[in-house]
Length: 80
Image 1 (tube, rainbow, N blue to C red):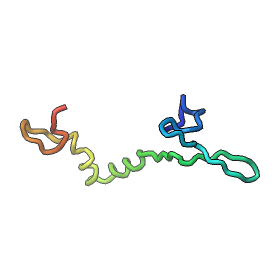
Image 2: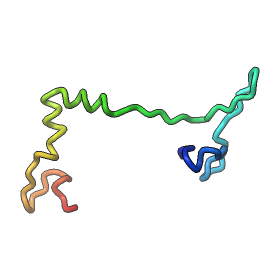
Image 3: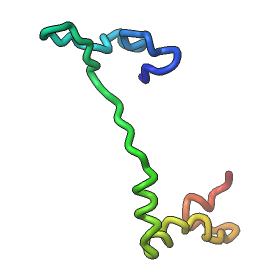
Image 4: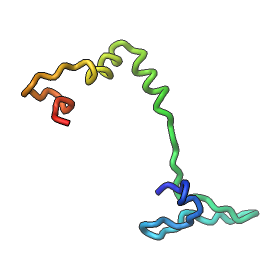
């Protein structure tokens, strides 16, 4: 569950009711989330794959592949 937009002020998970935060006792009371979602951009990875001519050929295979009627070589050859 993402605590975003309309869910930003919720303190418990909707499905199980488990608390979103654990209390960390120290000098002050802090609300620490049990889990965090980390986002890693896919752009640098894709740029690296397309920089190599060998992997770029594999990355563009679905676009350049010509399907033959009645023959399924790849799942992209199936009906939409």
